[in-house]
Amino acid sequence: MARIFINGISAKSGGGRSILRNFLGALDVPASGHEFLVVVPQDSGYEAFARPGLELIPIARAERKPFLLRFSQFDLPRMLRQRHCDLLFNLSDVPSPTELPQVFLFDWAYAAFPDSPAWKMDGLKGQLVRRVKLQLFARNAPYIDVLVAQSEALRARLVDLYRLGETAVVPNAVSLENLAAGEGFDFALGDGFKLLCLSLYYGHKNLEVLLPVARLIRERQLEVKIVTTIAPEQHPWAAKLLKAVRDEGLDEVLIALGAVPMAQVPSLYAQCDALLLPTLLESFSGTYVEAMFHSCPILTSDLAFARGVCQDSAYYFDPLNPQDIVARIEELLADPEESARRVERGREVLAQLPGWPQVVAAFLAIFDQVLAEHSRSS
Image (cartoon, rainbow, N blue to C red):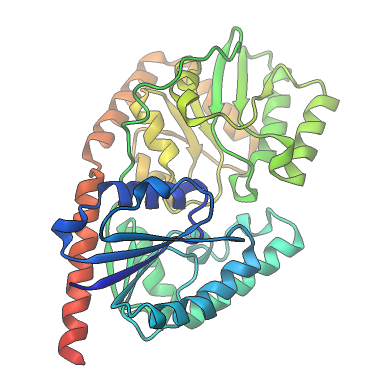
């Protein structure tokens, strides 16, 4: 039996939280033959996953980026020694400089696309923090025994960019159990064709482009609304964007609901007609899969990460070109039969994705392989 340490300190929100929660939920600890210690952010709802053979270690201040960097570079290696662990499964943005065998799940898309315009979609402080993280990523990459990417295209790109040893591909899985039911709620969105932009505010989501898109929708008198889930408290730039919407009188075109509880998300999909996601950077977006599950047409960025998930089921646009975005909206509206064909294609793509039990089994196989190789070499 090995003691496997899972670093989930940064899994407080977004995709990282979804991955860790689903992994822990699908993990059959007795069948694995291992013992697990899991670092998680304090007060983040992970308590229910504790059970015999799986110890949770809650850490405060996990939302502070400087603390996260210090933890991964200094505190974590010391904790691994003190806890007499045999393998690190690292879900952090940056590898840890530890001599312990390390399986690293890559989920920080900035490191795969260092030239993306998303790097500029934040203040100078944010850009500086990311540049430091990028340097640490490159410096610590040789400490990784196996880097796991979520697609072959992403794996190949990382191999070209960094000094990596062994790599593997484990496609992401999205838990769909919570999407089928949920809490009924009337969002009172009114009439018209409603485009759902389901995202909190992050710079790389490129939500500022929605303002000129809304202007064009109004100028062309399209019966279209964009429904967003951003709120002023999510980011100073979110507050600035929403103020501009109010100042220009675009409230009826660009609707801001604020954050929507997960239980109400199925109801929100049911009240909207298509998904609009102009993001500049992702490693894998579960939002695409959610839209497929809800038979929702997808309009999104013509970038490799989006095509890797959606394949030929989506309408693609230049995310930096409002005119092109509106052209794709008009294309969708003009041909309902083609829209229905792409929705059906999305259901086919969805059916090909693995479930979480298969994903967990793939990771456990990698853990066992690394542990066996380390045992032979020591």
